Amino acid sequence: QVQLVESGGGLVQPGGSLRLSCAASGNILTIITMGWYRQAPGTQRELVATQGSGGRTNYADSVKGRFTISRDNAKNTVYLQMNNLKPEDTAVYYCHADLLQIGTGRKVYWGRGTQVTVSY
Image (cartoon, rainbow, N blue to C red):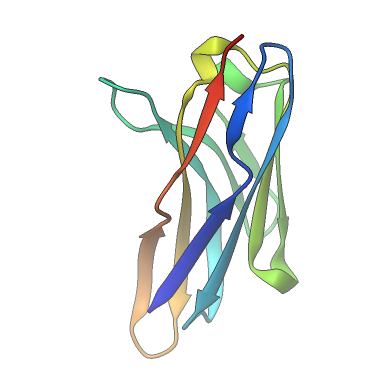
């Protein structure tokens, strides 16, 4: 079993910044891709940013130039630095990990989510 523990959400004013963190622990052989998705009320969960084990990144068009994803592979941790936040960034942010486990193969895990609210 694998656990993803997120932290760093909260309330911030438009134009402000937040940094999300997600640490993976448990039965992990290697993490293939790790990243963030978000879901606002009444909408489908959408990709925000992901990073492969080789460092290749993928961003939603709506966050390019404002958000930066990074990974610490030694700690099985992914970060999301969010700058110039906008009200439309308000959502629950979910950590995602596509990984190989010892003995059970490849599997996708999700964190429980952390709320990000951008408002005055």
